[in-house]
Length: 89
Image 1 (cartoon, rainbow, N blue to C red):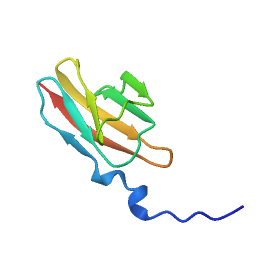
Image 2: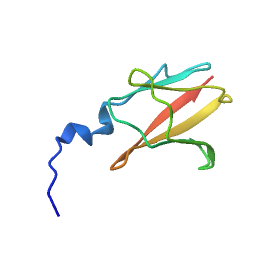
Image 3: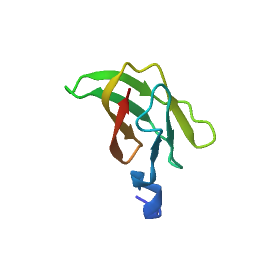
Image 4: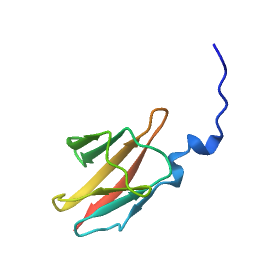
């Protein structure tokens, strides 16, 4: 079982930017980590949208067409996940 050493930054999803926040329509997610999944979760815990293998362009993912409200955006890579809060108004 060969050991593979990766720098901590490759697992660090804290350097993810979610903007603009609050937003009226489009939310951009910028990260240098390839995301495997993006989950849009309502304040009640309901998964509103699940994006598997999201399309990635210039280190940027885009989410649009969300109804007005407060959401948790769970970003998952192969090894880690982070949840950000987003307000659509």
